[in-house]
Figure 1: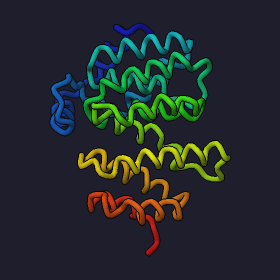
Figure 2: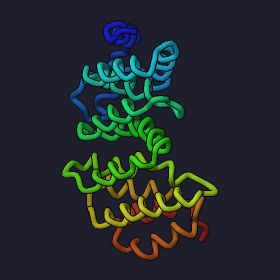
Figure 3: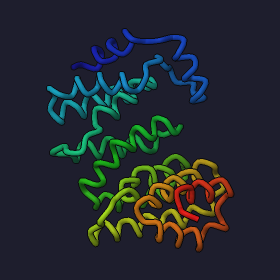
Length: 226
């Protein structure tokens, strides 16, 4: 699959009406074709089945650089897979996208792919920790969204428990950040954690909840029993 052929396949299913709705919803000036995410996922899954990892990385890089909403979604979907070997090139490409984030939708699709690469090699958390102090809000937010797998784990091994505690430390450093998306990311992490470790979630909220925005406190405790 070449980049031009992939773009042609996406353009062939463009929906101008839905595209206008999506552009307005995401508040983006980026070109939007109007394909739904499940369909993009189907196309990307079919493309990658007969491609080497190296070729997938090359195609994903080209699609991302086209800077069309659907090509960037497709780029992320090409790399969203639990087991990829070797995956250094995959991680390097995904990480290179993070400083370019300018909205939640594309950032979250990339995070879905990137989180799997972090679980595959948790040493990459050292790099992600650097995002927590980045000037770009979307990059700071990415540190929590990429690491959501650790909020959702059960029966943690000691290394995973240490990683979870480390990430909660990042979240604690965010509680005084007034940006809505940062507060939402902290709440999202805690809400998901509460399903697997209610005690840790309560402990975080007891210590830091008063410094969070009200909506974030409420969201974080959504699944905690009264």
